[in-house]
Length: 252
Image (cartoon, rainbow, N blue to C red; front, side):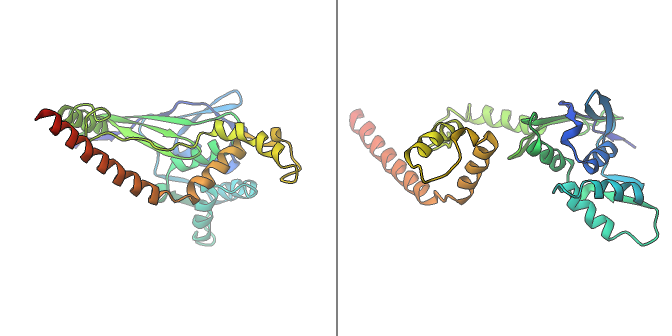
């Protein structure tokens, strides 16, 4: 019988003030938590725990102390507490229904110092099984959670072997037509405020980076560019046809 392990480290020390009491409690049970001044270093030699056990009173106290802050941990634990049998002194929470990555994402969203959190995992096995070794890396930002495993890397390498570098091989490239840069939004804000004195009583400097990020997300969510995309695809197809005509005509 082979035993599989996934030792994991959270590479950034997490400031204790950035976590709610509930998040600190839960993450300290999913991982090992090592204090380092005003931060905690989270790691685990075997792998993050999907199920944690603790006393109902301890969990309820942390939950109530975190009630003022909305979070993934609070939402999930509220459901677990609601379903706990009356009179039980202990409780086991199955975290397979959510993910510790979402808890860290909540922390990043609130933090004034963390721009992201990265987690690195090794896949190991007690026997030399071909499927027992590898790893993955996860990037957690306020907006997204992205990961890539060694299996993903191998697939990318195989695709590159068959097709060449995908970014440069004709027929496999991706061409960006529009990007919304937060720095451009930041530069535009004082101009807009100065141009219309009736727009707002606040000064341009009162708009924070977090406000700009939130504004960009709202626009990205509410803007539908599917029509422009279809038009660009159609125009590119026509341009490719014309290019082929010119190439073939020149070869005659």
